[in-house]
Structures are given as structure tokens and as C-alpha cells.
Length: 351
Image (cartoon, rainbow, N blue to C red):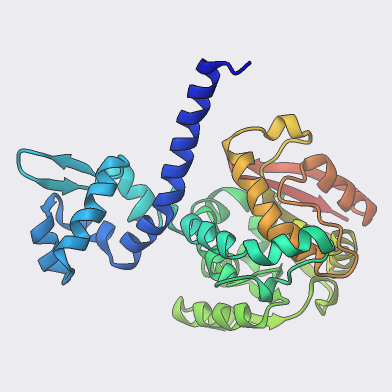
């Protein structure tokens, strides 16, 4: 027999989920047209005033603003007929350096939806979907998604949590950023430590081109370079620090990559691994963060790994114990969790 109370509760949940899903396109329109930033910069505005300021069609804008108010994203003053972006919402929608800026997350949700058809076929074949073959600009969305976390944590918190690494970087160290993507992590480190030399490596050529552009734009081309290379083929040895940002679980052969990275390091070198926060058991991850991570894992991470050799497919919720096994199997003897946020764990591994 159906429990009416449970049914009504679940229906309320579904309405919330559908409302969130319907908001993805609306939020991305607001971002693309500069609506959030305009409201943040100028304060409350009527639909007509905002349409004139941005050169937009008033009828379309009225519907968009109404949706944003119904969603609780904007405040609406019926007496003045104005819409306003509260300071808290501005941190999510308008301020790119905010630690909780989430526009990249909405780009990622759209790319994941576009990826459905390719991944759905793989459910039957068991094959993968290569990173460069995924729908839309998946790699652009991922880079934008991770950038705020790196901006707010990498230099001020994560690197200082490693034993003796900051002092080496200040003196002048040799650093490899493996799986660097668009290079935001590499550029941020290079900017903070101009005496050190940084090389970013990624197997996706288009991402490396974007990384080179970011290095030029941010004035770190002198101590930064980017090269195309899979993790197990990164050249060179004698590195003081090797980093892997949110990419180890995407690799086809993470243990093989870890073993190669161990060979790249100096005897006293450090491998810093940033991975999504996760418990070691499914029941530890049945929460809002786990919900999003398992979806991303299904539609992005597992298909990426299965498209490569070995195809370990750790997934985005591998957990610390599984990651430690990868590192110890590769020969690392000293491993500790150096830092964490609600979204990431930072592991320090030494040969």
C-alpha cells in the first residue's frame, strides 16, 4: 500500500529537483548575458531599466527575472517593481574569485547532459568515452568549475600544509603539474613562486593550448611551460614537487601513473594529490556532495578512464583508502592527508 505522506514528501523532492534542472539553462543565460554582474554592480533595477542598460528584449528579460525571483536567486520588491541580487547570491553567481562561485558547475551540468547519449551507449558496450570526444566543451566546464577552489586554497592553504614544500618553492624548485588541463593550478603556483620552474602536462592538446594562453595572460610565461604528454610518459626526473589536481581518478592506469611519478621525484620530493572528498563506503557518501559526484563520475570520470589502457575507473568517489592503495602499490612509503575542504582531500605522498 502506498504511504500518502511518503509519496507527498517524495513529490516535493522531485519538484525541487525539476526546479533545479530547469534552472541550469536559465542560470547560464544570466551568466552569458552579464545579468548577474550587472545587478551586482548597479544594485536593484526594474526590468525596463535593466533591459535598456544591457540592450536586451524586455519581454524575454521579464520572464527570466520572474524565474530568478521564484527560485530565490533574486529578491523582488513589488512596491518598486525592482529585482536585486543579494550579497550571498552574488558570491555564487557574480564574483569569479569567490570560494563558492558556481557558474562552472552549471556549465558542467550542461556538458554532462549533452554527454548522456555517448555514455548511455557505453552502458551496454562497457567501453569508454575519451576525454576529447565528450560532448560540448567538457574540459572548458571542468576548468571553470575547479578554478575557484584552487584560487582560494592552493597557495594559502594546501601548499603550506605540505612538509617543507613552500620553503623549496621560495628558494627555487622544479615542479611538474601532471594532468594540468587548462593550467589554472600551474599558473597560480607559478605566480606565487617566481623563483621556481613549473611545467604542466596533459594528454589533451587543446587544453594545453589554453593553458599556454593563460600563462601569457597572467605574466608567468617566464617560469612556466606546458607540454602534451600522458601521465605515464611525462619526461624528466629530479622534480621537487609533482602535483595532480582532480585527475588521478580519471586516469586509465592510476597505479602505473603513480609509479612513473615516483620515478620523477627527487629522493626527498613530494607528490601532492588533490581528489574529490569522499568516504570509503557508499553509505558515507549518501549526501548532496556525493550525489553530484556520483553523477559526474557516471557521465565523465568513469567513461574517461575506461577509454584508456587498463581502465581502472576509480571514479570520483574513490575514497582515501582506495587512493592510498594506488600509492602504496606504486611504491610510495609515506602518505598522509595534509589538508581538506568540504569538496577536496589533499594527500601528501613521499617515496
